[in-house]
Amino acid sequence: MNTHAPVFESVAKEDVAWLGTDPIPATAYYDPAYFELEREAVFRRGWIQMGHVCELPEPGSFIRRELEVLKASILILRSQDEEIRAFHNVCTHRGTQLVEEAAGKQSRFTCPYHSWTFGDDGSLLSAPDFEQFNVAKEDCGLSKVHVEVVAGLIFVHLGTPESGMRESMGPLADRMDELPIARATTISEYVYEIDANWKLTYDNFQENYHLRFIHPSTAGQGCGGDNPFGYPEEYGFQGPHRTQTIWTNPETGIPSAVQGVSYMKIGEALAKRDLMIPGAEKNYFALFPSFFLFGNPGTHFSHVVYPISANKSRGVIRLYWVGDDENASERYAREYGMAMTRDIHVEDRSVIERGQRGLESGALKHIHLQTNEALLRHFFNEVDGRVQAYKAELEAQGAL
Amino acid sequence: MSVLPEGYEALEPFVATYAVDNAGRRAEMRGEAPSEVRDAFYAAAQPLLAPALDYLDTKQFADYDSGDKQLMWMMLSLAHVAIAVEIQQEDEERHAHLRSFMPVTRAPADF
Ligand code: FES
Ligand SMILES: [Fe+2]
Image (cartoon, rainbow over all chains, first blue to last red; front, side):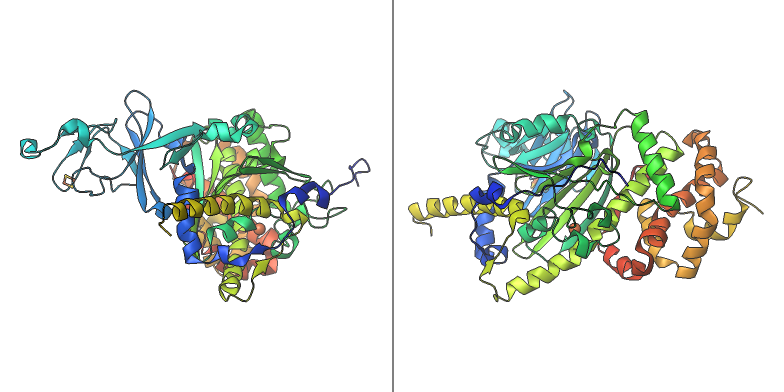
């Protein structure tokens, strides 16, 4: 028993009262009309994380990513002059999607339809029988998408950004720069589809209230002693973004046989690469609109919820590693870290879908949130503020 | 005829099931093999994990012979199987169903 364990102090009701205390409307979590407004108000006007620079290791590397909520396909590449650029994956002749491969290496992109060919700066290099057109090649470049890299993460903006991603993150950007993700060279990944609204899905991952009920054996160690729900020590708010400082249970049990060896291998692998960053394991970042990052270097994952419709979403969870697997032990440590993280994530999916089915019945007019669901409330406030402002714009234009 | 390095003969009966060269497939195999096979693999492999990694760490991946590769893949499978046996225990069956909705699509060990 650790007699020096500090006493856990929960965040107080008064600390988060500024976010409001009224119940929030349930319709926002299933109404297709609300979702239509979110497409523009939140997603076309926001920075969306779509990749990591390690996926574009050299000039000519490219990735194609789908962004269903804006019906967009995005081509992201590293150009010969080492710039990361993003374009709509749409041929400027008659709109054919240019690239079919999910990733690859090439500096020219030729449309399969009539063979228009584009360079890695998006310019139209050649087009058969182009004299027959009544347009200049200079006016036929690929449609550019704003792109910004923060801590190795590639964010795109499909509208006209009011501010940069880094700028909006304030001190969070520097904090993320310190984490392994900023230097990561390789990734583990698992994905899911879910019959649930993107906010309901995202919300699940920003409260610990459910931990002891949904994750009794996996995340159970995160609950106990004077913190039976495993609530965080602190919540932080930075513009539209949020953080939690995770509480770690000082009373961890004795690990099982393989678990013990695995924890040791994870620790050794990190120590060898100087990645034992003090306090990193307590950091959990929630970047607006739908990105998470867990700081713990041994299970250093991002989780993005991409909306598909009002009641359908998909999630991408990625763990980030610095350097190729050095040896068997490091390879093993990474596989165990991924398997462990996935075991926890898979436990959430079905209960979220169950929540969606309940809400869609219309039985609830409102959702009640407690002090330790403060991040959900902040998130809703940020989304709804944008939706209402956009609605007012449309009304002023007479479009609604 | 043994394919595994000397000292790992006890794992021979499990090569066909657990020497799997892809992380996504290893994750699936955790749930696909019958629980008796899984438990027997865990019992045989658990004491060999630390020595196997020590042995494999003496080599570069490029120098692995086919037995070394099989041993590596089996230890990676053990990472998945051990979570079933040590953590999930009686919940494993229900859990396997939940996991089927979250496939592993990428891991550094696959390259
Ligand atoms: S649509 Fe691409 S070349 Fe015609
Ligand atoms: Fe959870």
